[in-house]
Length: 440
Picture 1: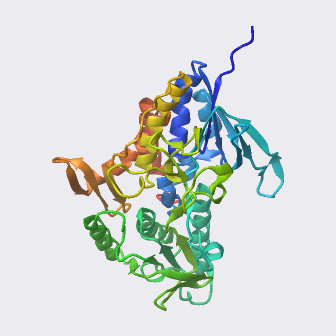
Picture 2: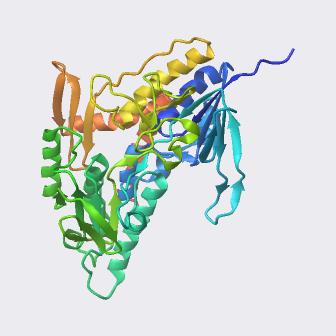
Picture 3: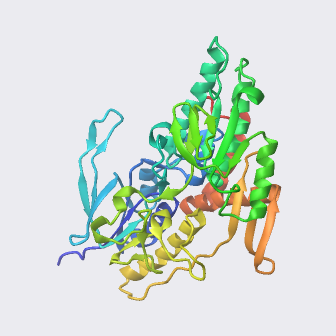
């Protein structure tokens, strides 16, 4: 008698949602050998994406917060495979991975294919530069840990160069321009205000951080955080102006050069460092991949079950999926809370599929509000469903605790409460003997 082949679930994308889903499925179906779980990602390690602005600013050392996929797979009964998805064959039920090369361009892993019974695509989103001239060449996005670390190195090098040069600091030399005033943009501005001053205090005595280091935000809409409540936007605007951040709303970027930004009104904003944080899209290779339905920003269109419209064996969720927001116009917003909710539902759905049940749960997005963290200066937000079913505006210590709890909830989903508790105590103790910013 031959052993029955296990149902093979392949999850592509190890972001917050994909990794949580693989971990929970591994702990249930994988551990009990009811299904085979494989997670595929193009990186070796995972860092929670909402923290990338802290890595970019230097207020967080990624070495202390990244999770090794291979270790997580070993601990939680799933398999991890390193690679970037570049194709799909729905007829053969196969995903293909591009060759994996090292930093020198040498091939480490040849191209491969993986067969699946159920495929889950959770590859997130990338920054959308809308085809603006010079954006690809002269700006840095914060989609990945590598990009965040690259920006931090460039910032650190700019400060070291200014410290040692014999000529006066030029216009724009130490100015950071952030295109886009969503949560990433405004949080990065506040973190940069703090860390550049901390860095200057560590022996960079030729730099007057208050005078020489400048931070600007450029936003096409008429206010900061255009997708969030106006009261929250106004509070963030006030706090950033107190810090000396220059806010340019109603300005659409038309070109980026090596020396700065041009806007549609004819303004020029000098800046040697430009971060592009305006708009998102799903990765380009998803566009109509093997006949799957996609929208104008490459997102896979899905039913309320999160199954793609053209193939019931393929699910998609998170930023790379377009799911209708029931009771509202438009789709579910690309937020971490949405990906977490969808991962929780898919955990139940995939268990149903493996058990042979045809009826699957349907997804309804629950908006619990938004929180914006301005580092050491302030945290503001609005909680939905509070009190009488409306929204409640919060700020200060309570908002900061709520913001940090989101990350702790993500960690608990991956490691369990006791492990996260011990890690938190250890980090609290070790921070007393470490610099408050990353110095290299």
